[in-house]
Length: 285
Image 1 (cartoon, rainbow, N blue to C red):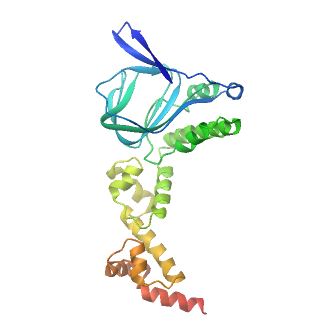
Image 2: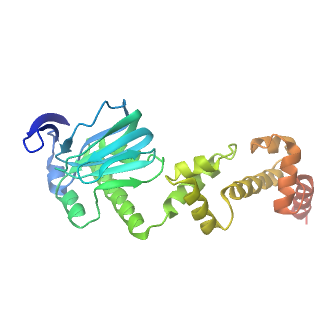
Image 3: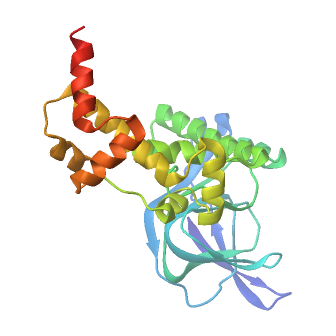
């Protein structure tokens, strides 16, 4: 993108206009959608004030780290926390950037007839949404940076899927997708003890709301869930390997073997050694 300065005679201020970078191909024109600019892991320093601007294109900015400030004339100022997603439409005067910290973002900017239809239908909406810290825009960005038509096509499809999933999540008001991503991450990192604060931040929720939603969905607390996942995985290791109980305990971040054995028995009804003997016996029946 490149910028020009436009004088706002009504408010006596200068407005920065972010224009579209030329480069549309025949494929983009025929398809009706072009991703014209992307940012991956861009870090902008804390701003010294509010500088109004507008875009000639649609923009999705995911601030996955840092802290920021959003401003427009209708909604005033809003502080932005990590996990916030800003969806912006062409011609709307606004500002967002770092505030007391860097604004660290992934961003996708786009335009075209398909984008206009998504906006007119209400599927793409201007606003601030909470999606957690999972960097969902990165797969779109990676494809969009390859100029080949097949990758441009895949990038467009993934962008539309992202916009539609965001819309469906908003109208359902559910947290299903965020919880699914969190559970996947927990199971990938069984050597880590997640705090409730970290889990809530990952899902872009307050701790109080996260605890309530999690208990409603899974029937147990977040900490109880992690304990069950760890013990279930540890039970599989006990039955499929000859590793000492102490080493298996450490694999799952139980550095106190007594604590591990106590939690294992509370969940399975057997001590680790009893569980292993029982499984060996079953395998020989």
